Amino acid sequence: MSDEPDSAEDKGEEGDALQAQGEMTFVEHLVELRDRLLRVVLAVLVFLVVLFPFANDLYAVLAEPLLRHLPEGTSMIATQVASPFLTPFKLTLVLSIFLAMPVVLYQVWAFVAPGLYKHERRLVFPLMVTSSVLFYLGMAFAYFVVFPLMFAFFQAVAPEGVAIMTDITAYLDFVLKIFFAFGLAFEVPVATILLVWTGFTTPAALTAKRPYIIVGAFVLGMMLTPPDIISQTLLALPMWLLFELGILFSKIYVGKRAGEDEAAQV
Image (cartoon, rainbow, N blue to C red; front, top):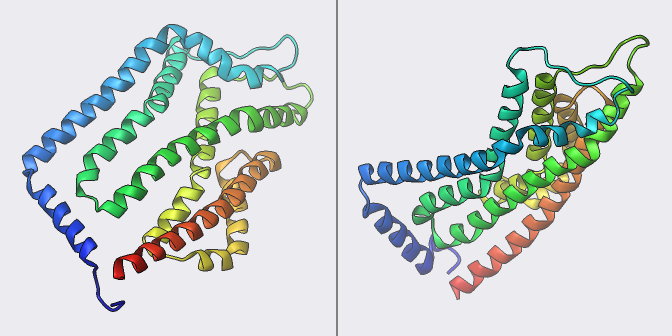
């Protein structure tokens, strides 16, 4: 029984998936893709319209970790003519995209789900939801933990006689990069589970490579963050801990998958 390449259930799922794909022509797929892209754009525009009146307030909230550590009597500056308008607008647009991410992921899920097998649908959707939550957690970690420590460090090591007056556009670009770096770093558990799910590796193999993963986390922390030991460490340590969490969930998934395969063969 164990030598059979596919169980009856898998063959049935394969037939259902092929049949579902065959029911739509290529043009119909393109039309559905267009409709879902329009829904994504509409969701982003709705958030943008709602948030735009508060663009300056949102930028003030974003700048608060830096303003808290600026020397008394100094402030942020705008070195370009249109920066006072374009910078808060850019922030609002990026924030609208982040807030619309659940809608984006749902549209992606609804588009690809008909072509997935039943066991794939059971895994892909939870991973999409989890990846969104982890990305938001990474951004929150950067804002509430990393920024205060980082800006305090930059202020402490500033050379004597240097007036710290950060340009608002440069600050926005800087913090967006940090947000993106920590958001991606918090996706480590999802990436680990996907590697195991695709058969590229196993939990045991990942556990054996733990020392290399730890070194790699600190190397990535050095590459993705400013050249200070605080932000590098604050990125590397969560990546390591999330890697361990990914291994744990991968072991649970492998055990559950093996139990399902045994039940299907009986």
